Image 1 (tube, protein in one colour):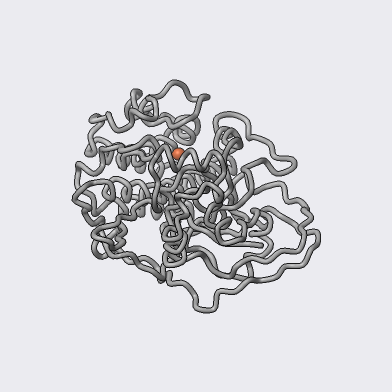
Image 2: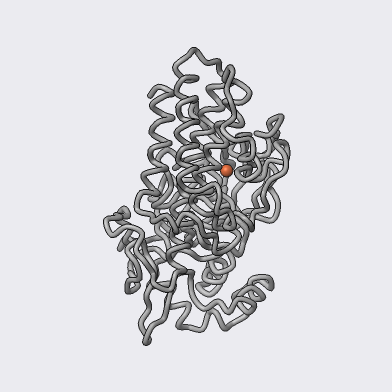
Length: 383
Ligand SMILES: [Fe+2]
């Protein structure tokens, strides 16, 4: 695929995800982690404008110099920005303005990409596309949070079709021998810097489950009093359960003794055979403890992944998000992309039903703080 088509496809897909929204849905920010959809639309556009058009497109005129302040996410190199909690207070620029901004930047990108571009620009465009694709998943999860926390539980799209994700009947533990294994990205395609530094690790023999924990199985933990028994939890997890009165995964509701969960179709009775999702690392750990098992490390996951199906949920691992040997931050603002987040987070492996095409790699390292659960996060057991 040529660069123009690659760029165009990414930009169109983002807008396709937003198509079912009403204008008001674009604006709200119910919690700090959930950004308003219109902010994602502006920020991904700002990324192309700031890192590609401004330095590399001859005579490019910035669309609006004030947008740097509202659409810079976390790049200290690029200057001051609106604090994250205030993204939902931005009634301006309007949704309409932001779509116009997108069209303006797209035009400039098309004319840049229609010329001969060097490898540096090419790499930045590929990074920009991958960046926007990561925000596409965030759009899906943030929209779910926005609508799923509205007391009317509106559907996002009644025509939304998730891939089939029923639990396999024959879930079994797969044995992996002890030995020295290679970890990290290899190949010619795109990867993020945090996947680089292919290196060897020694693993003891272990077993890993061929499938994810289902809603029905997780319900067993709830009904057995898992949320009331400190023995299954880390101290920090137990504090989190008590402080937030946690009793079930995010989006679960007990109505007249029957469990429901919010989906893109609205509130529905719990789908028992689907993999459990929207659990925090704390809950994943507690469930595994209750069951007498544990979570896999990210290395165990990567070594075993060719032997099971994955891609239904991001899977919490027992690994801290750390740099691989030889990891180096890129110079300049782009070096802020991944490296500065390598503290106090856990790695998740796999991909989810709302992960953008091309982001499912055996070496892909997602990462979140241990209490977060608005992503499609689930549990695979190991022992
Ligand atoms: Fe971003």
